[in-house]
Amino acid sequence: MDGISGILGIDCGAVAVGMAVVSPDLAIVRTAYRFHRGDIKRTVLEMLNGIDLSTISHVAVTASVPGYVMAQRRYDNQVAFMTACRHLHPGMRGLLLVGGEKYLLRCRYRQLPRPAGGKAQPGRNRGVEPKSRGQLR
Image 1 (cartoon, helix red, strand yellow):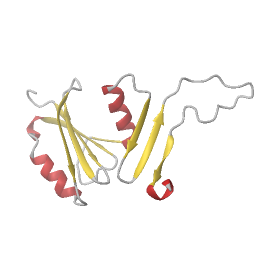
Image 2: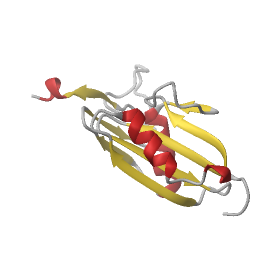
Image 3: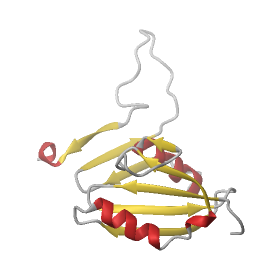
Image 4: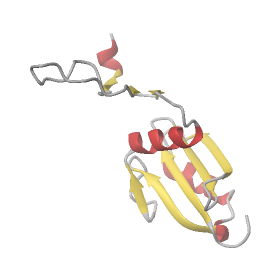
């Protein structure tokens, strides 16, 4: 990547930090993933030391990244995951996210016609809400 044109993306999860640098045409230039062991700030700083920040023009983070990380944009975690998956896998019809504390299942179905009564059919065009570990029993 030449010049100052990269976009740095950062996500902090329950157990790890992920970073990616993408070019303006959305090609992945570099990725990094590291367990933070509860020390998110130190892990983020260490990971940033491994990136040539002089080539970064913008920083985008997910909503779970602490506020002390300066960024031009903050994105909802679920929207960020779905957008990335659709970019990398255009035919994607479902997404199962499994993390340290919760899970999420998103499925896309073709829109079904409404029955005569006008009510939507149950279970269609809806995601399953995240559940904490305590609710999985």
